[in-house]
Amino acid sequence: MMGEFKRSKLQICFNVLEVIKKGVSKPTRIMYGANLSWNTLTEVFTVLTSQGLIKEVHQESYKRYILTDKGLDALTHYSKALDILDVSKEARVLYA
Picture 1 (cartoon, rainbow, N blue to C red):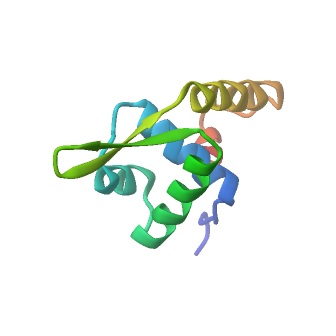
Picture 2 (picture 1 turned 90 degrees about the horizontal axis):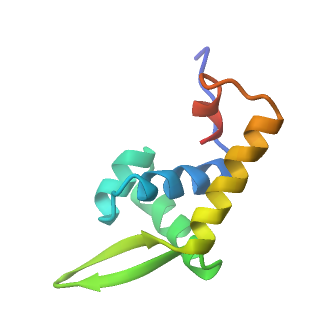
């Protein structure tokens, strides 16, 4: 279909970081917020935790994910890169 695109793995990772930054911490809610399948999300969690960008926190009987300082720095630099490349706000949806 016209207008459809496939996000890169990098874009997906930054999209997950952005969802977590907005205060979403439960895995299922992150999955919905980033528009991902469960399998893709678990792969992204593995990458982001191994890089120290997010942290898994066990609360009561479930897991939550929080953004680390390194993850926040990565988002800040990513946003600056989009500014430098002069990516419009409308097009940023494609990159985040």
